[in-house]
Length: 224
Image (tube, rainbow, N blue to C red; front, side, top):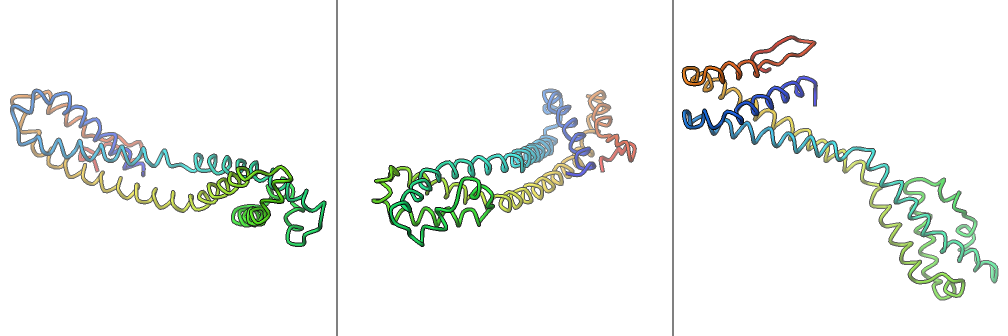
């Protein structure tokens, strides 16, 4: 949201609060103003929800979740990797050799899809040797947990693009909702002054609330 949009939102929220507080006074006098007030209230509610969604979908939360999932995946890999290394003591298996050469550190140094590919290959080879690994104290449950943790981490590899797309949609929706709020205010600008005889103080407060004070541009009585 730009500074101008934030300024407009601040002004519009102030207008909404003014009309909300004075509603028991103006609604019985001017029922035709109610739809415009409801439109403003609805539009600003939508903006608030979209902004909240953007805030909660930030990159910090994604990064923390991904880091935790990676640690959990590597933790689950260790019992399986130890079992594979033990199998090599009895008979050298060329298929297992590249995997058995890994340590926690070498796996940790891999990143993204390369890390997932290496761990998926470890899980695949371990599954085909489940009976032999059981003798090395690697249980079926440990193998299943390892597979599950890989899948959970892999899901997060595509999250940044998904989060960016969702954020773009929310920003576009927020701008559209601000546009709806502008339309509602333009209609209220015409109707609110009609209450000047009965509610002069409300009309004066409305006009005051409709002024945006932007340090870079000065007051804008039309809220643009």
